[in-house]
Image (cartoon, rainbow, N blue to C red; front, side, top):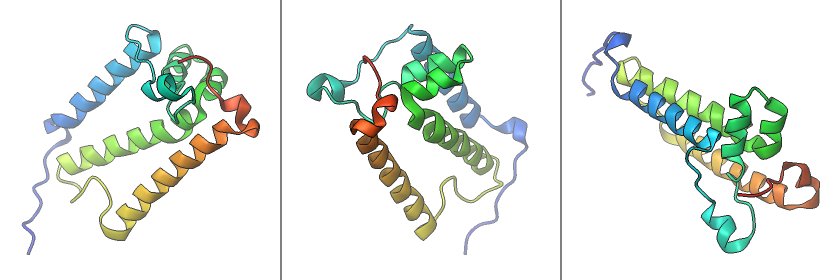
Length: 140
């Protein structure tokens, strides 16, 4: 038998706001170029990884240029950013005692993880073929 959940007020959250604030700080540092982290995969192989162009996409979003952000890394804009927001929301609900888990349990969780891996690999392959030329990042 599982113990009853203790529901805490939203203002009692400690971990989730720290993660959100830290993530935002890192995103701003990467997007503005204060911190530059070259892609080790691209440096070794010369091929863009699924995340190449993500820092420039964040920088474009900070300047309000959505088209340029999608051009640098559509995957980061369409998949990774909404996923990060959903995970932070779920983590906040879990930390406040309003949910039993922050990631779906059982088959649903496994299916979500497998889908994320398949979409990531599909994006990686797509941006490497000639049809994905528009989505290919320039530089590291």
